[in-house]
Image: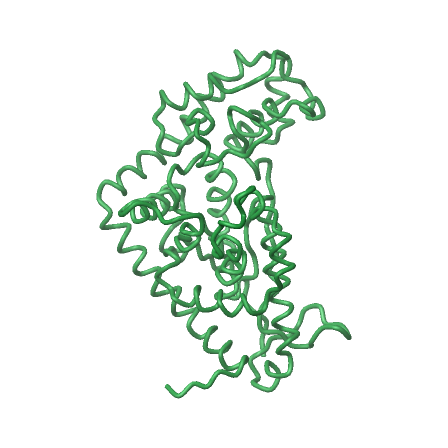
Length: 359
């Protein structure tokens, strides 16, 4: 009986208009993890239908675009498993089982459902309400130990931990009798000595875990914002990037020399944070260079940096999406590798729960 091996899982929805926030807040953080432990990166297309079904062909195109972004950003198919979620049926099966583990009260407290459903929650799909259970299944189908997430997803990962703990507790005797558990790293009188699912750890780090809108520094940069000026899309050319940064909302004050001076200045804080993330510096280092200067001097420097960092990625994304043969081959191989991990996990889970298997 050995401990579960370290494994990273994360994913992005294929809903079009991938932007700088997706890159800085997620994908760019994944690249160095490839050399630290096993990594699995998914295009979560089942999540993409929770708020409605896209037009024919749109979901396929968006799935390929996200995959292209992964590869262009430095996710190496030779180092990582890259696949789209709908191709591995274990995600959906485990999500249903977790629907029966999770409690209504847990899901009712999810703030993202309240935000996305708004005042019309009675007409929201059951999928939108229960999609945190699918997210838990995405992670635990691979018994992933680490998940890089943004601040807005931390609550969902806490739910994943709750589901794993409840499953481990509810089926502690079966797990032990079947001999398929692993040592609990934190045993106690209330917790079993052996567990099946790990209590996954969130990985939240760095100066730009949440990139905000260029038009409103209090709102997250979003694909769904009606204003294209609110975000830098990963497919934007140099002129579009420069235009959007030039038009980005600011305040009349000069940049401060200390990070404390960004307090109550959300737009300034956001632009400094973007510069810091793109340059690999801290906010304080950026302010050490630009403190006391007006935005008229800072914005051109930010534009030049953004173009320098994003242009190669944009070019590679376009190359891949213009001929999707390479992308489709990578997703096919990735799905086969992912299934090879998830199938034995679901076989174990069926045994633990007690389903009759006559195959």
